[in-house]
Structures are given as C-alpha cells and as structure tokens.
Image (tube, rainbow, N blue to C red; front, side, top):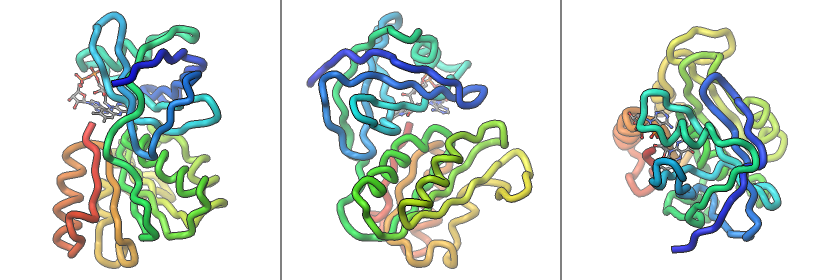
Length: 224
Ligand SMILES: Cc1cc2nc3c(=O)[nH]c(=O)nc-3n(C[C@H](O)[C@H](O)[C@H](O)COP(=O)(O)OP(=O)(O)OC[C@H]3O[C@@H](n4cnc5c(N)ncnc54)[C@H](O)[C@@H]3O)c2cc1C
C-alpha cells in the first residue's frame, strides 16, 4: 500500500453542504476513471474514502458532502484549512470505466456524481464518440452544483443529461426520484449503466434495469 501527502490548495462551498476541495499531487500518482483515495484524518485517526471527481495537471479535485449528523469524518475533512496536508492511500478501487465502445448511462445522487463525472471527463479527454447520458438526482434546486460542467460536456462529447429534484417542483427540471427515468423507451440504445449514490436508489435502479432486460454484468455501481 502506498501513501503520499496531499496539500489542500483550494476549498469552495458549492451548495449549503457540498464542498469542492482541491489537493496537490506532487507525486504524480495515476488513477483510473472512477477510483477513490483513502484520506487518513489526523484528529480521528481513521481512513475515509473519497472518489476522485476530476484531475487537472498536478491536482486532484473532490466533492465532499458535509454530513452534520454523521461520525465526524466529513466534518473533519471539510473543516481543513487551505495549506493543511493529509496523508492518503494512492488511488484504488474497481469501479472504473470499461474500455469499450458501448453507449453508457450514468445515474448519480448528490456527491455520488464524483466518480461518474470523472468517468465522463475521461470520455471527453479521450475523444470517445459513443452516446452518454447522466441522470442526476438532488433534493431541491439549492442543492444543484456543476450544471455548467454538464453544458461543457455537451459541447465536447455525445452527451445529454436530466436533473431531478425529489422535494421541489421546478420548471425545466424533472420532479421525483431518478429511478423514474428507467423506462424501456428511455434506456433504449444504452448498453452499460454506471451508478453511485444512495444505496436505496441503487437497489431500486438495479432491480428496474434487470426487469427491463439489462444483464447484471452491464450494471456497475459504487456504494458510499
Ligand atoms: C468508495 C467510496 C467513495 C466515497 N466517495 C465520497 C465522495 O466523493 N464524497 C463524499 O462526500 N463522500 C464519499 N464517500 C463517503 C465518505 O467516505 C464518508 O462516509 C462520508 O464523508 C460520511 O462520513 P461521516 O463520518 O461524516 O458520516 P458517517 O457516520 O459515515 O455517515 C452518517 C450517515 O450519512 C450517510 N452518508 C455517508 N456519506 C454520505 C454522502 N456522501 N451523502 C449523503 N449521505 C451520506 C451514511 O449512510 C450514514 O447514514 C465515499 C465512500 C466510499 C466507500
């Protein structure tokens, strides 16, 4: 197992409880699209996994949700000050983008977007031409982040997206859970499915996809 130190270079609040945190990568570690890093948090002395959302030159970008009623790890990491350093295990994990030309649909709730955005960025960086679609679910409009990045992806690759708010009806957006989208007419033409987010969403999505005839080996998921 390989550890390195990563310095927090920037911290930005994207929504009331989601932070974008940019760490340095002086060690030039490599990652496959969809992998995570395990940060060792100095106060609580435990490791916590965070999916790599984006890499840019010598930087790793993460999106981290502050869970106020959790066991403190997300609070400790989002409380870090710019300039502080953390030890982390090099990128690992098997939830990676498959190297094939199959059209792919991505299903994310909240910060479950992180590994999926990393995979979509890889599609763009490699100039891959197959069809991609993201279905992104949040509670309400105030939770929305990265909408501008989805528009940028549309300029670069064969990409479309739908955003759902479960607790608010907003014009131009879909209302209710993202699993509502999983109907035969909507998934027609998509061969592989990648999903990350709430375990409840993923269980329901897997069941619906299997009932629609998608083989389990074409459904890939990461549980937080
Ligand atoms: C492979 C992997 C990748 C991960 N990547 C990310 C990531 O990119 N961004 C991120 O914010 N977290 C990510 N997580 C979750 C992260 O490791 C922590 O579990 C999270 O920060 C909460 O820790 P906590 O101690 O504050 O709360 P915990 O005590 O661990 O959790 C408290 C409650 O919050 C729920 N919860 C945990 N994480 C989330 C979440 N992200 N959104 C909503 N509810 C949650 C738990 O199910 C639990 O009910 C990832 C986890 C794994 C295993």
